[in-house]
Length: 141
Image 1 (tube, rainbow, N blue to C red):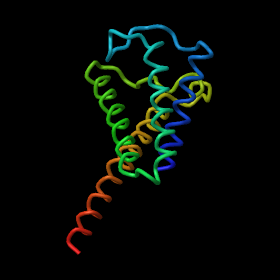
Image 2: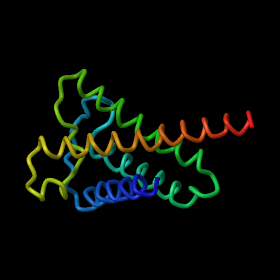
Image 3: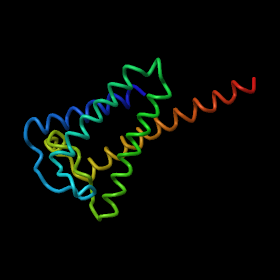
Image 4: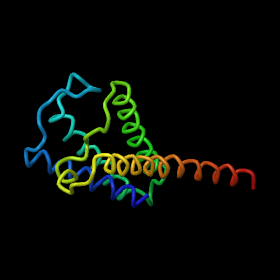
């Protein structure tokens, strides 16, 4: 859970940094045509930071809520990628300037981000399933 939250925190802060540096161009978003990328990008970054901080601060006191938060944001990212696929877009391009400056092939970056998305979903939903089954076993003891 901590690794997923730290990953979210890093990606969120890098998105916010891209906005501060002015590297995100205002263009219409394919999935959400009513909002430009230069607005959607920082909102997404801030959402990632808020969820990451919440998970890091409340994971001991509220593990179910923390896992549900990870599952929720992972589901949002998955739905966004499905929307991109529906509109025929390839990679989401949500890595920002930092990732582009690493000179990693676009296909490789897409695979890394898809792997992180899968990790978020497995940690969130997997953790919730484990807790659910643990509670069910405790009821029958």
